[in-house]
Length: 338
Image (cartoon, rainbow, N blue to C red):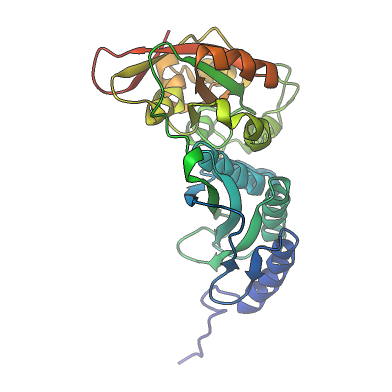
């Protein structure tokens, strides 16, 4: 019988160890004094400076945007995507990020891919003051194709208990504002890949579109925008925040609304980026489906009183009023786009 080995089964331990050394170096560049160790079976983080700290956690993935990144061999932006996505999610509760962990799984280790992904992770973590304290790198032949990989992020943040933002004080007459997205962010890529037949015709990603002045691939890899630095100074003025991800405006705003209320959103009150119009026209996608799948140019919504809206717009020049809160005809919270 022929001798067998892990390498013959498709797992390269030596390459994995080299990758881990690179990751450890990138991670250490994000550390602050609260990080106590790296490289044991668990990472330690010392929490300081809070009276009644509440920890807020979230986990998410980049989704099939990774297919675009792999086809273009540009893998640094997806690292920033997942950090920013997770930071925005816990920001909706009012939390500031403490530390981040990642999960990278591949069919076969490609060192250049790993280095690009982790460089993007580390850069984004440093930009928001978040420590990259650990993660998992897995080579899984038979689960993933050799050229494929998956990327998932886990974040933990903190805030004082008295500063929790949960939407409970939202009431009829409150105002809905939005902050602009950077294109698709990390949602809707399965539909986009189908509309443009990306796998069958990868060269479509190199086509330049005058509507947005770049190639389709460059537009689709725009980094998921982070709203922490915009919103952190004005959080006391905010009643509710909704990060517009999968499910669009219709699926995300109700998550912060009390029962019996509806958000009336006026679709002509902000500029919809050209990429969404291109997708809708090329794919013959119904408008209702567009609003259900994509953020349509709205990355974050802010709900506040009418008095606070004036103050917020002065502090956030890119913010736009896009709607208001009214009583719902049914008990369940909902969004009406008209």
